[in-house]
Length: 98
Length: 160
Image 1: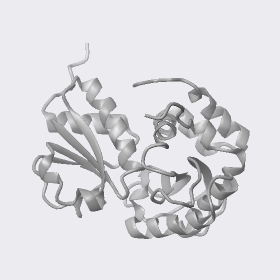
Image 2 (image 1 turned 180 degrees about the vertical axis):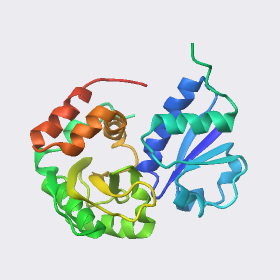
Image 3 (image 1 turned 90 degrees about the vertical axis):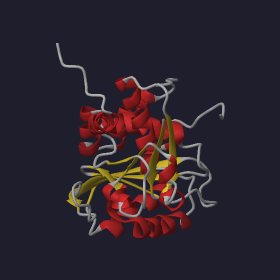
Image 4 (image 1 turned 120 degrees about the horizontal axis):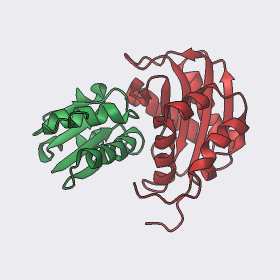
């Protein structure tokens, strides 16, 4: 599975998002994912090669077509938001508590 | 991989921390954030202009979490080493983000290339992702308090 995180320049928020996405995937138990980061200029039109693309809602509008699922993140440092949205996209709900 | 990654503590000098400042608007706050990077000693003043241009180009998404903005430009010849700055704003300033405004904390970041800031950024992500430490960072009144918050991440080799 290939996952792309996108930000304006590819080295700030997008990189944070890649780190938190990798952490969330580990929590969810996905171990076959490759997470890459790209700046919005490069990412335009690249979406077709990825199963999941994560970015901000602002940049999502500029992204163009995405083959897989597009996830928009509001809080890039909130691991829970990222994990929950990834679980939804992957159809891997959290195990019930208890 | 480089052998010695720059830690957040290495990248943030006391001179690059300014707390509870008043700032008129987003541009002023980003300019101040850039000046602090320069005050830290590794970044030429030209980088501030590049930061302002980047913020204009990409807009308010730099507000990456409620109250927290990450201001930076692309890797630049004006940057001689990984550098971060910390600016807190009192009162908080609207950056134009639909959900995460107003901004209380502006992190300035300067990277000489695509990679060497990664360890420091990882430590920053840990700090900001921890509600208690983030709150203390946003309400700190002295540079020493800020540096003390960062200290725990120093020197730990984690491959999380």
